[in-house]
Figure (cartoon, rainbow, N blue to C red):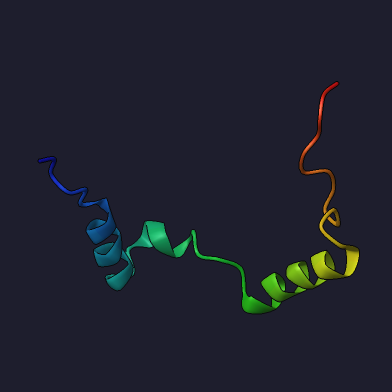
Length: 56
């Protein structure tokens, strides 16, 4: 039996202690995310450019 990966627990501890390397990587403010998703729904799935392409 393999040992469980402790990285998830280490991440939880770092977040609880507000470790400096995790504070700088947080998400954008909710208003920024809401604006981005709002633009995507107005323009449709391809609102942010081509995601997939097919080759002949």
